[in-house]
Image (cartoon, rainbow, N blue to C red; front, side, top):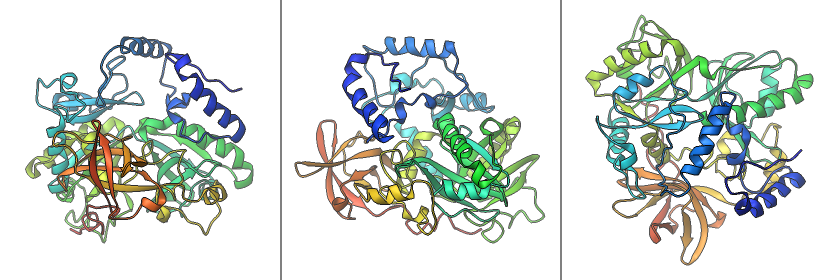
Length: 473
């Protein structure tokens, strides 16, 4: 059965809906990513009352002005991490992600997020700048509890994941970044895989897509279990909280609270190398620590029992105070990851582009067979992902989806945008025609009904050699 419903004004969307639904019927996939209309973008946490109240809110918002930094209030807060109250008391202004409350940025007491919204740089912009600078120059703490998390075990786990994902599987105690593809070779899910044991894996994916990722994972397991052997998949999203600590001083903060015979070397490159995972103790809290940072600085993800989150928050906050540690929200993190050209699922990554078109060949092992490989290769490179530095207006930055021009010809679009504290100007990522995807190419970005100069730069324009991530201590 094929069903398309739930539109606020169905007649206005009918033509496009019919067109792409027909593609899905005939080809199994539409030419554009339809995930934003997929019912699995909601999880089993959603109730009848939630759906009704959010539907009513849509009608309330029909005839009002919408800003790109808008956050809608109905049914909130609903899903909160244990540290929500502590973060709120420290000025957190929250965004809504898959029902979760996630800090967007932190502001002084009395700040009004609604009044701060704008098509230009909102009143919150300077706070996000300060948070981004804290991670680049000192240390910051980010709540990433909303991450989707699955544990995959069983005799068939290794063979299954090797087929299901594009990259080589990591060795025990190591991690990798990898992708699960659609049957058409485009990107269905991005995973960070931690290998705990021979057939024991911990998968981390985007927080906004828990049910969406789980549905695809479980269906693939059902299809392949007879071939590969027993495979157990458990959604452990709500069992584990996550704090990401990052910045040049992050090692100093953790060294003050880690329980180790030699705290000074416990987090060194020799004992805890980049792209590895270890079980450590921070005070009384057992932590599955992963040495990786979405910001491109020295850092760790601290996966901890969710019931111990407030204890760990207080411990890290106290240890971070002598080092000027700031609490950091999602908007600053989004800017920082663009300085490193880190692709984001739902932006640069989705069902309308392959990992090769996203310019991520280092995460695709073409020496092995994996789901969607042949289709990916057949597609070739129709467009290519690039990073751009933009000489935009003094009071505005791109958000993503802005058109890219070469002269009078539109040659692509942005998928992400923001401000770069490292370069002091706007930054963006997006897709252009392959022949345009050359470092140094001059383009223009359309913002506020004007064209602004932009230049394609090398991937990871900030610290392209990853020296800050690998710095020893």
